[in-house]
Length: 268
Image (cartoon, rainbow, N blue to C red; front, top):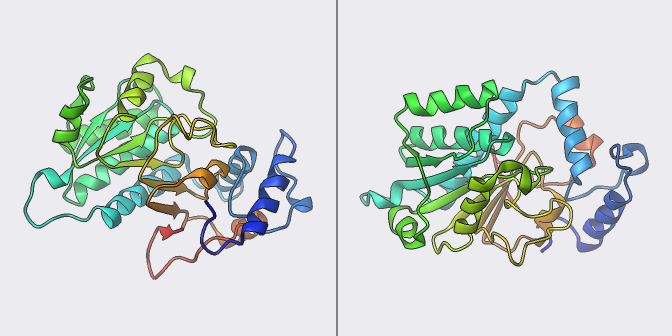
């Protein structure tokens, strides 16, 4: 799949250039050509730029990404007038940064008058994760103690599921058995699935496991799309990167759709 606004040849050249980047990071001086996707090394370099040069805080970035992810959910699944079930959302969180984004997403969905429930089987000891968990608990967002293995129970109880289990660079083996069993269950659902940044389990570079892994209906790319997003074939793809300064976008030669008005997401 090619993103709108990006010529197929330009995207292909950008991906080839990214694949030839050194392991230590992208050589931006030698790769000025505009691109649609970022490699894992480029995405890490962009985040370092925001954290070290612009002095944004990690909590700021997680908050922006989680809020934008919740907004994307509201765009695709607006609140109905009456049905209570149509408000229910299951947010499945992992122990790394994507899980933190999922916790923020759940909190904002609650503010937007949805009814989120969180499944967070492997809790991180990181202070940020603990703080975000406390915020959700204080807002009376329920946490599941287990995820039903009977898939139809989940289909019947929720309108959609948010996948915030694994992010780029997170090895599935590192997150533990409970998260992996949750992903196995998510593969079998018939209700819509929204993945944050990348579909959990996909190789962020090649999209490996795209055929046999999760197949989300909606993808919300955080900051900028990763290379594996080229294999996304779902209904809606958004980028949540309004917070990325123009200078950083130019430095990484990103060509993405503009944001309308005060929107924090843009459709691709």
